[in-house]
Length: 208
Image 1: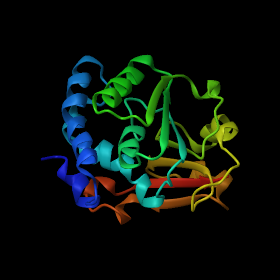
Image 2: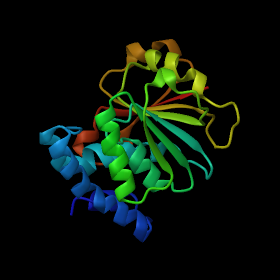
Image 3: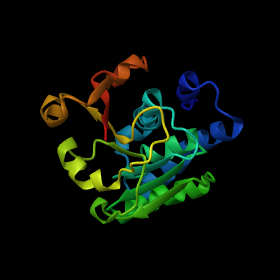
């Protein structure tokens, strides 16, 4: 069963969390047939390429209860939905400028009973709220993202890591990281997960 890859790296999941992760396969297949949020050839790799990839963030930080997280450019719900399952004591706001993608995220979250996750059709420039962390997955170059979400990072600290931006990205990132080279932290996901697909995939953490 494809969900086993999640259990492999996160063996302490509750029965509810495991059940929620298991439901993602059918839900995303059904919705993807109507609204293409994951490439057709990639849907069979949902757990490795989307769910586990999202959870790489949990290898960099364990969000404390009460943490507020904004998923910027969530698409169909990544990384926000897998993280919301993993951290039920935190609140997640998922925003995206494409309404049909947000609809998928809303329907998936509702179907699995995620109470700590609010998908909203909104562009990042319009978001006014304050959050401990902004997470995103390959949405735009880091300098562009910083310009938009800097206003949304709270000054109140509640985690072991200072508040900031956590991005999932692949490939050579030297150029876009250059403006922040003194403070940005780059972690190879292949340090956490064995699968070949994670080579040259990274978690970027930029504290504020």
